[in-house]
Amino acid sequence: IPSQIVRKLLNAYGSNAVKVYCTLAWKCRNGEQYVTRSWLAKEIGLSTDSQNNLDTIGDILWALDDKVIRVRKEWELDEKTLTTKNKLYVRLMTLEEVKNSKK
Image 1 (cartoon, rainbow, N blue to C red):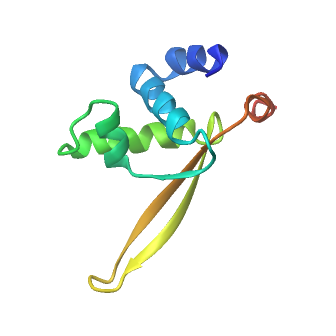
Image 2 (image 1 turned 90 degrees about the vertical axis):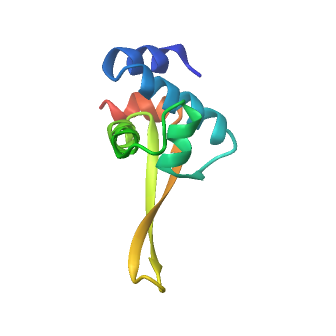
């Protein structure tokens, strides 16, 4: 993990953002991966029973999207309940993409 990214994450977003990024760096080491807010919360040591924690993970993903990660959403219809849920796919941006995103 490039030290410039870790420093910027700590300075701008705090320790949970660093934990999320490091977890995603491990999970996405071979490219884009499906993740859930619950899985990320559990991996960084937050309770998955708390909606506030799940919202925090969502806020972190939103804040990091197009800065150091790319988040792609797919909507899925549950035909039994007729509800939709979004599936999150995440990949890390390359250091070059991160530098170019500032322009």
